[in-house]
Length: 291
Ligand SMILES: Nc1ncnc2c1ncn2[C@@H]1O[C@H](COP(=O)(O)OP(=O)(O)OP(=O)(O)O)[C@@H](O)[C@H]1O
Image (cartoon, rainbow, N blue to C red; front, top):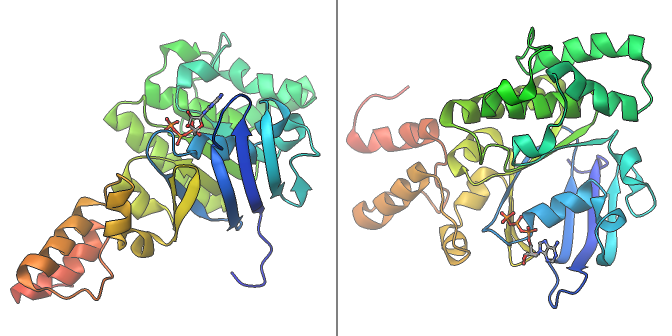
């Protein structure tokens, strides 16, 4: 990506909540490029939400604290642009779907954001149809958001964010309150948006297997700092660092690591992170055919 301009650039960012003794974020430096799918990993309290609030400009405009350094989204310094302006570039989906929903119908839920942007009523319908179609909720415009399943509610939250035509979708543990089928649906929509529409996705998520499959970059946070930043293979091969931070790796990575230590398999410290990769590399150990 050398030479390419980042869509998001964070420089020397340190943030301390008002009244807190220690910073929630310490000297963060990151560049994220258009079309990346970035997973944020870290224990509770490691700073993932705070970082996301800095990206959508809720910090410093709506949350009190001391911010040093800068966050630039599409060349806009978030300290200088109101959160409302940034909402056109950065769409946000939080962990609790019900917390984000307030309207009587699915269509009204999407119209709310459009109204705030000053979109004329006659222009709203095509946008509402389009975004419901993208997230697989076509035909449910008249339903109450509160009658939807957890997965559908989160897809509605994604649709409401998409209606604002953002270039970055920030998602804070979007499946933590959703059943297993709903989780799959939400991950599939995020992956589709990234793959087919080149949407930049930044997702805080604990599901390492899923992130190994979908993300092209993993950022690991620990006590407000970025301790690892690389491809899933690079990051999940650092088993010792992750273990120290209290985090686990995909099960197949763990298995490959154990095979190396117990059975002298040699991975040269680069471990498989998905089942498919593991199969390709482990099958030859058994002398069997693989393709
Ligand atoms: N409003 C607040 N006021 C003071 N301190 C806060 C506030 N919100 C978060 N913190 C603190 O900032 C640090 C980072 O929290 P943050 O919520 O960003 O972590 P996280 O990785 O998102 O955790 P979780 O997965 O629990 O959401 C923690 O020490 C937390 O206690």
